[in-house]
Image (cartoon, rainbow, N blue to C red; front, side):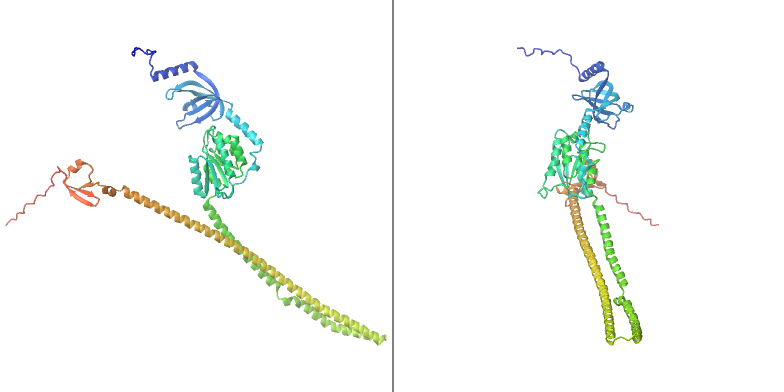
Length: 518
């Protein structure tokens, strides 16, 4: 076998990469030229250059499209993700990435895209089952002790949520890591929501009081996992109040309709979840002041009322003075009346003689009636006085009991507020001590870094700093131009004279002054 035999096809023409790319470009443009393409707009990108990059797709293929800055300003319809359009332009290639693309200069709407139509059909079906009814939505807890977050643990979303919670009201956060896009997104998110709901009360892992399902912005395809029926049903069945924070404010997914509250951004979800600690402290202080004022008012008002009632009661003897005066008046009139009656009866008897026995019985009967009336009058006055006295005593006892209840309730409220204030003071002291320790440790770290980066530590490892008359010397040429130098070691300085340095200039002695004898 001849090893030098020519390989088949060795006489074929060799193209350069640019020649082949140009030939493909010309063939494609000559074959198709200007075309009209119908498809659904997928990913849309608008960089700062002003150009618009997007995809045209159907159920099997994707075609890259671009509209240059000058053409984008003249488009009658701006490309939006999910729209089904008819794009008019020319087919060309992009040699830099070995792909072909459509240069679009005109866009006409052609109806809803396949994904948008599917999404709307699914939304209507789930809404017909009542999963989006307002009556199913629960109010959020005012101060959750534990918050469960369903999101990716490596994205910026969880950092934004934790940072906002730490600024507003530090609380315990449980993170359930899930994929936020792709095929595994929907089953993982649904399993996370159901997993948080299945946690037992009082178990080793605390059951959250509030759930946040969060993800950053993205295209319709990126957010499609949160439109899946499994995720929507899990959110609607959640017994824990749930906040949906998927995408940006303009993005809408089906979980937003099934959740108890929709947040425009993950940061806004954290703001909905907890209040501001400083505002709560101010409100607590204001409530405590109002409670003290109200308690004092409740004490002062019954006390003043009791004083007013005591002044209105007057003296007990004044209640019987009127009756006693009337009794004295009738007693004074009784004797003349009796005497007049006796005289009248005596004249009647004188005019008509009557048996003595009959007269005695008559007088005895009248005397008995008179004594009975007198006894009844005394008893009635005594009973009336006793009833008034008993009524005053009962009223005083009721007032004392009411005042005692008010004072007891006020003391309990003040004790509770004092306990809360003591707890807040203790927590504040602990926070201040932690902050001081952290700052002290940071200062020590900075001081150690200063020492390790300083040149003194470098001198201890055997290095030397060369000082000249004009400062530090860094080159050999500069060292040879000076008569002497100072070598700085870690433990002091040594004067040295470099080899080949010019001699140190000496001062010429002044000639002696010649004094004239004249």
